[in-house]
Image (cartoon, rainbow, N blue to C red; front, side):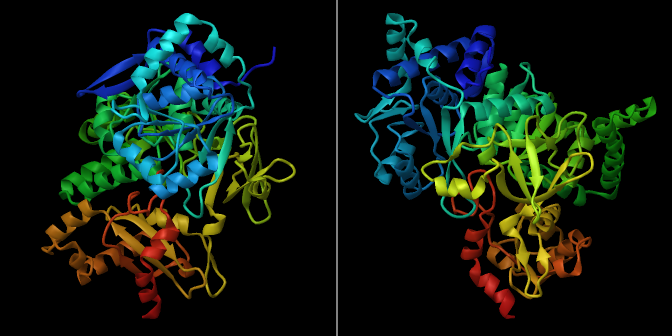
Length: 593
């Protein structure tokens, strides 16, 4: 019998198998409470039956606009269980951006979380046939999701087989979603991903990353992003694991201690922030504190080498690691909840130095790689199969080619069906042999580990014809505890320059120690002593790069990048084009001096 790769079929198998087990954990009135698999399954059936009763049919699009919460999962599973196509919309988008995506995908129904977001839909001007709201709200245009569930329960009691009949019409290659890219440049594209794309990607990824029904996830990356949708949602629901929802990105550390996850999927920004906070504390500490920290780090490297290579640890080394944990690493371990077995990093490059630090602290980070167009995972590190600085090995059933210009090409069952309503754009990235042209530059080592150099379009070609990959330099700069973000400049220029965002916690401590007024901040960032200090940090962190890659000039920006101000995508990638537009006067200033 042919194996099927249908999301709701896998989910409902777990509803039967793990009926009394928590599927979801949500913080309500200050405490986390569970939603059992049985109850989640019943709610999914009820919502799906109501959608069908409204005449929403197989292949119709349904939008979801919400932060991460249990109703997001209910809505999506209800959609895919009866053959509908989910269209996730980032809550952070402007009304104009929302309208563009809705007008392109034409969804008939909207699931939305709050009245505030509903106002954004009203402002966009897009008209839905039906709107289901998660927070109770009196409006003739909306139906509260709990009322919808009750209505669906009545339909189910009258026709208990109806939902199974609807689910039986879903096929492997049916679309599960149109996932719009978060768009660091240009207009977001609607990536068409099928049930089979997702399920095959889940099945093949967990063979390397090793995830089990006993695992507990903490979800905080936006579910509208394909990394969280696949890794932090479909993986646990297909395996029968548990998902706890963070209250917000600001409360992740607190929620880790409450949920006590065994696994957390993140973009590097979280790890960079934690690493920066730790190193800032070390650098500002006493000589004894620094000495203890670096001794602990050295002891932790033995643990890291054991984790990576499987080499045995002597009883004496075990004692040293135990002391290192007690003196240094235990606080960090406890902040993650005390049960964390591994982090998974994706969405952007992770510094090998940061990954090494976490491994030394007994917190393993397994980095992976993929695109929205690949559902998303195509390579990943995993237990017993790690090379720091790489994005791992190819997951099963995935083929690669490296083009003449070092672009990475990939083919496999997780590669998208194409871009919605754009065969021309699809043909530009998927060649006649079925290989997707990723736009990333990289290479494999002799053991099959993939290393990413940079985005093809990000390469800077200086006026003297030198090719500079900004990504490794920007990553290195962020290893300074004083530098939060950096954007390299130099395409068709005579030298490389940079825009720098400071870590305000670390730099305020430095300012206080050096008796320099931190406020007003706009005046502080023009301080000559600060410039000298940051210049030395830049030189320290780029000493291994070639002379033509050296940063000759830089400017410090007056604030951090945010999603709200348009400098970050919802998945926390820097929108370089927007940053350069916003601070073009500083760029011009550097090249006019």
